[in-house]
Length: 592
Image 1 (cartoon, rainbow, N blue to C red):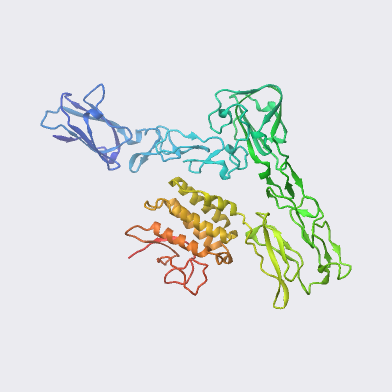
Image 2 (image 1 turned 90 degrees about the vertical axis):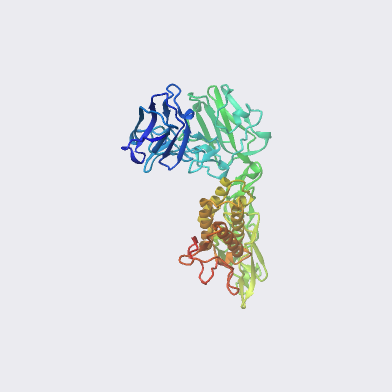
C-alpha cells in the first residue's frame, strides 16, 4: 500500500518538505520514494532517513525540493494520520556553498571559484589571490606568496608567468627564486607558503648584513619582510645597499614591508640594513637574478658586477647580459649611454667607433666622399616586426654586407647587402633571419611546455591566444610555425575526449589573429602557411564527432578546409568551392 501525500497546495516544489510523520508509530514502512525538482527519483529505506529520537519521523535531506512523495507501507495496514511538515520554498535557506534558484526551484551548487553563506540567492567570487577548486565550496583558500589567482579564481598561477603587478608577486618582476642564503633562519622562514613561520627570526638593534645564496653576485628586484602579527615593525628598518625604496603599503598587511630596487644598481652578494629597534620576522624574501643575467638598461653594458654606461662612439640596445657595441663606419654617437648610433650626413664620413663625423676634404678621404653614384645611399629602415627603433644602414659600396644588431637579441645581426639593381646601386632586402621578434621568447617558452592535464591544456591555449591577439601583426615566419606546433600540442592531448569549449575558442581566436594580421611575406616563407593550415585541419577533426562534421569556415560557406589550389600562393587557409580566403575564422556544423 503506497500513499502520495505531498500537499496539493505545494505544486512544482513550491514547498520545502522537512519531514514526514505517520501514526500510529507501530506501522511498518518499507521505503519512501520522492521526485525532486531536478527530475531525480530517489528511493530511501526507512533506516536511512528515520529520526534518531522519533522513529516514525522521516527526515528529508537538506537542499532538495519535492514534486511528489510516496510512502510504501507494504501490505494492508491501518493508517491513522500522516503529517507533512515544511516551509514555503521562499522561506527556506539553502546550505552554505549553494544558492537558491527560483526557476526551477533548486538549491544550486556554487561553481569552483565561488562560495556562498547559508541562505544566499547567489554565489560570490573568491577575493583576489584566493581560490576554490570544488563545487559547493564554503570558503576560499589563499594562494601562496609568489602566486596569484586566475580570473575565475579556480587555480593559482606562478608569478613567473609575468603578472608582476599583482600584490602577491612582491615586486619581483617575474622572478620567484628566494635569494636569501640557506644559513639564514630555516626553510619555513624562506618558503613561499602562505603559512607564516611558527617561530621567529629575531634581529637586534644596529647594523644587519643579510647574506645571499652561495655568495654570488645578484641583481635584486625586491626585498620583502613579514613581521609578527599586530606589531608595526616596518618603520624600524632602513635598507642601505644596494639602494632600494620602501613601497607604499597599499594592498599589503600593516606588518609587511616591501622594498623595490632600482633598475641601475651594482651587484650584491649581501644586503645591508640599519635597525632602529629589534625585529621579529615570520617571512623573508629577496627576489632577483644572477647579475650576469640581469636586464641591462639601454645605453649600458653588463660587466657581471655592474652596469657600465656606454662611451661615445658606442651604443647598447639593452637586454640580458649585453655589452656596448661600436658604431659602424659612417655612423657616430657623440653622447654617452645611448641606445643607437646616428648616420653621418652626405659629404661626411667616419671610422668605426667614431664620436663624430668628419667633413670630406677630398674624394680620396673615404669611399663615402666619392659621392653616391657608385654607392648605396644611407637607408633608415623601420620594420615593426623586428623592433620599434630605426635600423640606420650607412653608406655602402657594391657587395658590401652591412650588419646591425637585432633589437630583441642584439648578440645577433641583421644584414643588408649593397648591390647593383637595374644599373643602380641599391640595398637589397634586409636579412632578418637571425633576429627575434618581440614575442619570440614568449612563444619559445610556451613551445617548451608539455600538456599533462586539462588545466594545462586550457592554460596553454589561453597563453598563445593572448600573445597572438595582441602581437600577430609583428610575428615572423618562425613565430607562426611554432604557434602551429603549440596548437598541435594542445589538440593532441586526450584525442579520445571531447575538446573543451575554452580550448576550441582559444585556438579559433589564435588562428583568426594569425590569418588576419600576420604579414603575407612572413606567411609565404618556410612552412608557416602550410603548418598553420594543418593545425586548422586538426582542429576541425577534433571538433567533429561520429555523426556531425564541424568545419572551420567563413560566414555562409559550410565546407571543410583543404589544400590550396596548386597555382595559388601558399599564404591562406583556402576552402572547397570558393577561392576567397577566410574573412572570419569560426566553426560551423555541417547540415544535411
